[in-house]
Amino acid sequence: MKQIALDIGLATGPTLANFFAGPNEAALRHLELWLGSAKSGAMARSPVPTYLWGGAGSGKTHLLKAVQDALREQGASSGWLDAGVLDPPEFREDWAAVLMDDVHLYTAQQQHAAFNWFINAQTHQRGVLAAGAMPPTELKLRDDLRTRFGWGHVFQLQLLSEAERRAVLRQAADARGVFLGDEVMDFMLTRFSRDLGSLMELLELIDGYALQTKRAITIPLIKAMMEDS
Image (tube, rainbow, N blue to C red; front, top):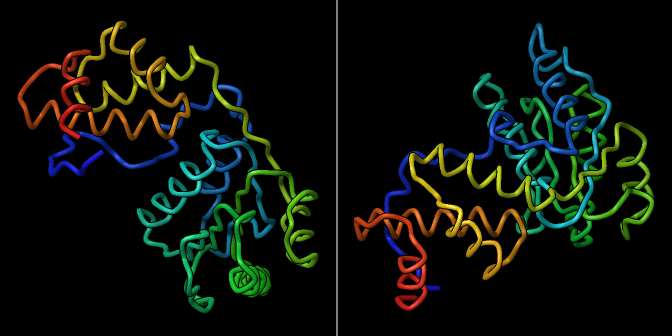
């Protein structure tokens, strides 16, 4: 699909508030408590690591980015490492936490950096939040890194049901100030990937195309967008 230059309206980035927890309430509450526990800066937060795991679309990246954004709003910086960061930076003592996403995809260089971040975070009593596609014991990583991911808080994230995915789409559309009819929702869920992340990207494209063409979001509009791609 070709890129469309557009204004994405009232959309917001990932936050804990716009995360539809469903069966993942425990993980959400844990992160909220962790973020709210600081009374005198980063040193007041628990340094015990947290590891989230689950399939694609279960919300792992959403939660990590939401924590990153919440820390930024509190005036704190954090380190971010995912499989796309090919040249990881050195650990910085001014980081309030280190956030590591898609750890199951890390190269040897990224694993080396992640281990260094982990050790430094523990030394300086900083938080460690990580996420991967499988439980720590099944990660094909160096032993000293894999075991560290597993010794703290571990939460398995469950995929949302279809009814829950519909609720998330409705919530996201409402946040943008657009209306998604039931027939449009059915079309999105039956004709495109049912992965929540993909559905949210699709909603962003549809909303932008509707703004660009000054049309309501309908099935004909979606078909026209696909033909223009």
